[in-house]
Structure formats: C-alpha cells, structure tokens
Amino acid sequence: MFITTVEAAKRLGVNRRTVLLWIQTKGIPAYRFSGIWRIDDNDLEKWIADKKINVKGTRGSNG
Image 1: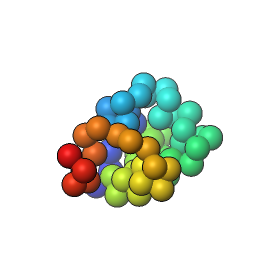
Image 2 (image 1 turned 60 degrees about the horizontal axis):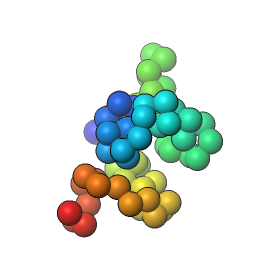
Image 3 (image 1 turned 180 degrees about the vertical axis):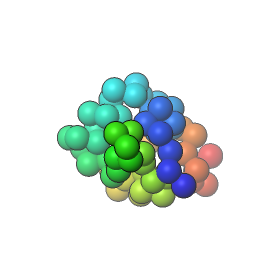
Image 4 (image 1 turned 120 degrees about the vertical axis):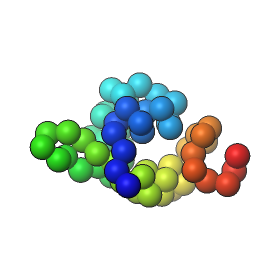
C-alpha cells in the first residue's frame, strides 16, 4: 500500500517538508505518480528499521 508524504510525516513525527527533504537527502524510498510523491508502506518501515529511527506509532510490534 502506498501512503502520502503527509501520512509518512505523521508516522515519523515530523513535518511534511522534512519528509520531502529526507526523500531527497536521506534516501526514503519514494515514487512520483503524476507529480505526487507516494511512499510504499513496507519500504518506509524497512527504512525506519535500517536507520534505527525510534518512531512511535509504527506498524511494528514494539508498541
């Protein structure tokens, strides 16, 4: 499932602009469809785990 940058920002606890910056500089895997960024939910979860980012509210079983 693809999520928007707004949804990713909520999950990461950051501003949407930060997500856009991280797409460009920190490698959040994202795709542009008709000029709109979309992020694969599973790719974001893997990116969070790989970067060892402590995020409240992720789908993982950490709670």
